[in-house]
Amino acid sequence: MAATAAVASPWAADPATGPVRYARNVVPADLWEKQVGLLIRDYPYDSVMAARVLGQGYAYLLTAMNHRGERLGLAPSKLVDIGVHTVILDTVAYAELCEKFNGGQFLHHVPKVDMKNDGSVIKTAHIVAADGWEVDLPLWTDAADCGPCHPGSDSH
Image 1: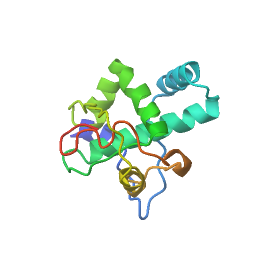
Image 2: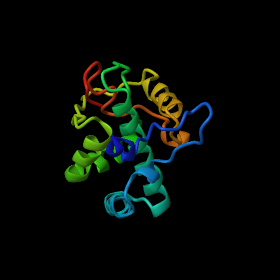
Image 3: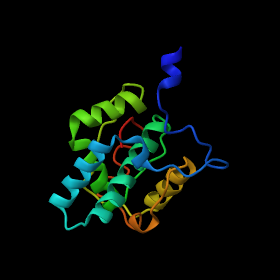
Image 4: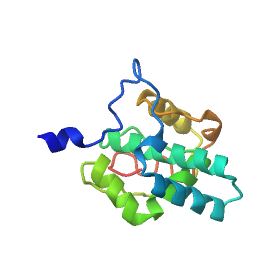
């Protein structure tokens, strides 16, 4: 039973009464720095922008994991989706994230070809905020190529 209590949960804070949570605080420092570096390598971002994009990618994924099976039609913006892809393409670390925060179940990525602009992105930002995560609203301004990727399933 003590082992269960020791497992970190990103959903421990009550968004109505607790502090805002930052995705950076649930990611090991070395992994965070590596993934920020990957964003800087692959996109015209400085370290500040890369950290913003990565943080929102993690906040989105952790929210999707928290609401697994609820059929909410969550969808990231294009910029947040870049952070999501950075996380999921680091497959060993992503599998560990799913193990720790998604009950050991892999959260699949099922992109769609057609883009949607139906309000699902801003709705998702509100759900991320309601889960207590920091929302960097300027990064949530448009529809992503993959959202909602596979509504009604355990994917994002």
